[in-house]
Image 1 (cartoon, rainbow, N blue to C red):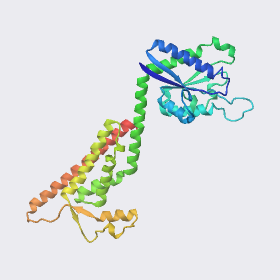
Image 2 (image 1 turned 90 degrees about the vertical axis):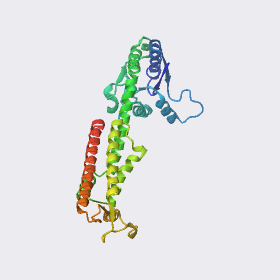
Image 3 (image 1 turned 180 degrees about the horizontal axis):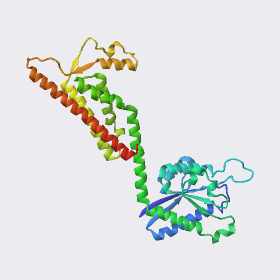
Length: 339
């Protein structure tokens, strides 16, 4: 039997019989009728109910919201009177619990209630009145036993959530996954210099040469992808990103296979400047060159030139592949993350 935990966030500033007790009774009655309609275990919870000892009240409430399926809150204005000239507001504790519930559960699993005898929807803070508000009117205790409107409205609202619960969860998970992937891409953009990548992809095939700075930069991109924290949840995004990284690694591997270190008079080493600034380190790394050999050792210049042309074509192909896989990855980012 499927279980549903319903958490009720209440306030005691207004008449308890007209708000807190009445709302709780309506929730209990609605749940009782729903139990008869569905084979469900529906459980109402609130504040530190059924918690032993002297618990941390705030953390206990947050823990209960974490495991609840539906959150109900009385957001009636509690400071609306002629002597109060401050901003109208619901109970502050209810607002804290509501904010946590919206972040944890999403608005689709939240039911907000107001007593129109104490406030109207327009009295509510802007960010609250943008949510679905369940209203009832009760100003006198003698009206309670004749009032079933809130119970019926709550039953319908609860039933709608229960019937659509799986689709609501899927949408919430989808949104959470999107935020996860969006954060990874934002972190990637902070590490990634597209202008520098284009410089590298144009320079290497044209000059048949690279340098330590280019090597390190391409490795930096690959190392970002190797971090398990940087895996996209969306499988299509993950595939496109892996294809891009694979093309980056292929370029570095091709350079390592086809090029040799070129120690020339302008070569510098980091050991000469251990406390150098970043710009100085970059200059040192750029001076450390690797190139396709210019020496023909057997005097077969035809074969030598053919081999250089072959390497240049392979480097051009590797460069083109990086462009294609990056464009494909970027299009998938736009399609899935809407940026």
